[in-house]
Length: 136
Image 1 (cartoon, rainbow, N blue to C red):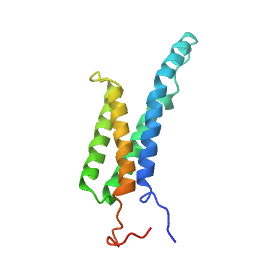
Image 2: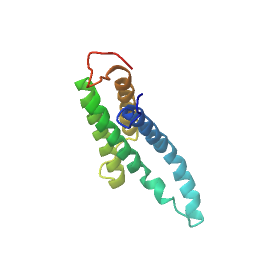
Image 3: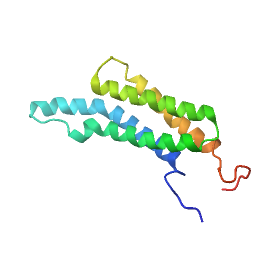
């Protein structure tokens, strides 16, 4: 009997967190429109909306950590970490507004992270206790 753990599902969680992050990023312009209307009525955006990307990048960190530890492919491990780092830096840059970067960079990096998680899940899994078998 298999026990489903976070360790075994980290690629699914990572891809899902990245997809949610992209949805959040795509919905943000709509909230700016809502915010413009809210300012007219002396309201502000909810605190959680402004900081939800930190939650997504935190979940994504643990998913990348577990996926990178169990992958059988070194370039996948490196690409997971590089794409996560770039995504983290772009999100922190948005929070601090250090450099003006096109929003498309965030979408491209998040998409890469999703694709690498899905690729890793499909092609790069190994059972560290029995590396020579293909049992599910």
